[in-house]
Length: 74
Image (cartoon, rainbow, N blue to C red; front, side):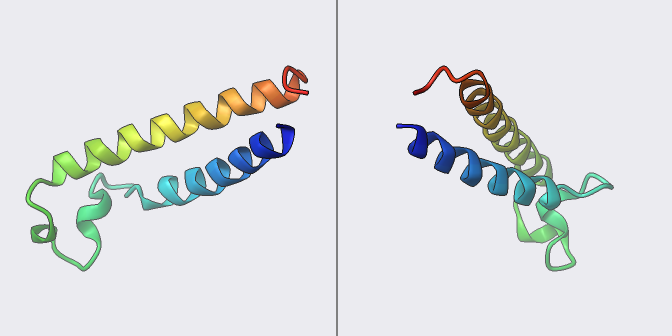
């Protein structure tokens, strides 16, 4: 069981790094890929979706880190 949660932690950590790097410092986010914001129908919708996904992956990473750190899972 511990190995499963370690795998979840590694995967969510790598995914979290990738998602954070996808955020644009200017607020363009995924819409800036390809050089034009017309690639997506709604720039704000894409950025909001990216924010939600990043938040959920961060929550999963945090919970798994706490579970493994305090030896709750044996």
